[in-house]
Image 1: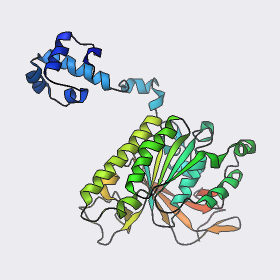
Image 2 (image 1 turned 135 degrees about the vertical axis):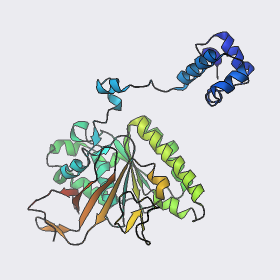
Image 3 (image 1 turned 180 degrees about the vertical axis):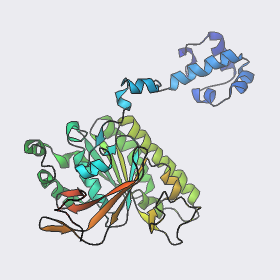
Image 4 (image 1 turned 135 degrees about the horizontal axis):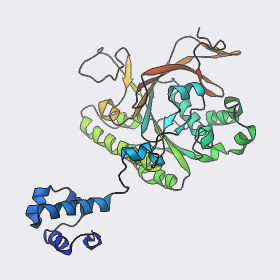
Length: 352
């Protein structure tokens, strides 16, 4: 580090060099009393040194609560969200996905998790006034191949899903050109993707949504039961990268997660996150759960839901935890045009 660039007395800089401190990290990781002993500076000089070094490595100025209330930092305000392209689902999520943080969508196989991901990949491309972010999406597959046929079907059915939008706007969007697909066969490829390729797309403004489908596949297959510590270490490194990208570029991150069966009933020693009566829990345990800001559970229910002359299996989307949402849920169905929520008391949509 170039100590002369800091606004400090030359006497303090000379003492720091004499103490063999070579970087800002070394200075900040040493306590005040230890720094006094190593540099033979006074307490006041050490405080000035800490403040100057901290200011040099700080990427952005601190923001006070008063500045947030007065609207002086709009980039930090959580007003805009990524719409699900459905009023019922947006109502459940108070507008849609938050722009910063990791949102997890967990559920059993065939629950409809990938359908939500595909719908959000299209929704993100609309202008902000229509619930989108006017950008593209990165879709990382770790299990199956990308469902390109279903994506094409959803694209052709956009006028039916979004009848409130002008047809000219929908037809002007080149949806398939703005979805970047990656396949990761192992953890190394996954980490390279999110740490090298995805930041390039985000910096260029080509994408504003990152989807990982699914996060559990590689972590469950590459580690044995007695390698929990190593798995947690890799999970933390992976989630840290996702958080940094999301907060730096205001890009929502949606991670699909598998579930694991509960075979021993409710256990007070296990963190069930309110899902005490559930027969399944999201995979990867508490190490991953602590990295998630919003956890959603999707379940496929018995019976049929009718819409006009069509029918499909009903789904239940549940908010397990979120800092801005209460514990709530809604019914939804997967149709040809996409996922649509079922309003309470809707006469056209009834569960049999």
